[in-house]
Image (cartoon, rainbow, N blue to C red; front, side, top):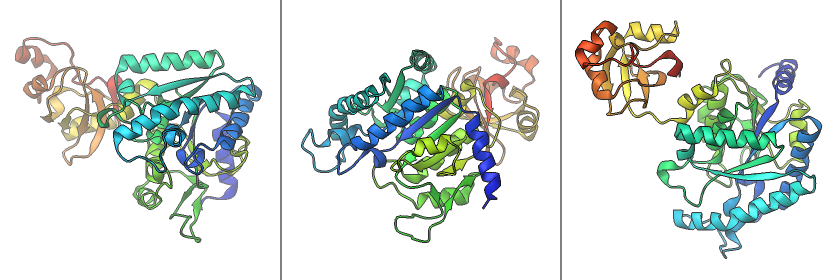
Length: 382
């Protein structure tokens, strides 16, 4: 456990840098008796409006709650289990959810906008940039974006999985300075505090190792799809891109105000590396790899230690059938992933040029677009 003075210092440092924040509110916070908790929504509206007006912060709200909002309206007494019922319930509930937000924020003269996204929207670079530009425009107009997964159309192939994953992607998309994940327990514990009275909370985590991940698997979510494991995966992604994250209890009154007053609330996860650009975050954390390129020790050293591009000479093998511009994993001889990047050549041509010097590419292929198989500007260390 870290010294309290050190923890408070880290809090103040992290909060003092925040100009733009993503706040994610989970189903366990927004749901009460299989319905929306409108009292919580009114509290969120009060706190977030104050941050925008008094501190001049830019806020993006990632909100669950569409299915809970629709349950009673469609006559269900429990959460649906099959996808068509979930989609239909969400389609009824989403309108009510945004209406409740509009009503609550309207009391503070704060305009809101509804944004519904799928993984497909953020995996496609053009649509990714379109979403980013729309959100920047809303912030410029002093309108609060309220973002949710588009449950009414989502299928397995384009599903984020949960809003924890979505919130980390929005944090990267918008170059936010912090991600605040509001759930129904006080922070990250060594075991589930709801069934273990002796559970110990961690106020500060500087590195997410396997022991932390194992503990997270033992703390399920009471409501919703995420649970603590998905929150830890979200924290891994944002801290690996240079952004801090806080897990805190959204059921506690004035919790957001307390966080921005740098009080020791919840669990703070510190960044593990310097800030990454939005484009590199997109490559590292949004795109799903279409193949694997195995590299030798020389190429591994050049990429990891010297920040170099991947050249054909260092390639040992290629897995998958992918095209130009596809995302791939680069692994070493022990199958350890060292980087992700976008390739300049299709898999079939990379197989032909592996092991060659750059001067031999054109003779082998009959053409040469680039010396590099993956340029360092499109390569991210993992």
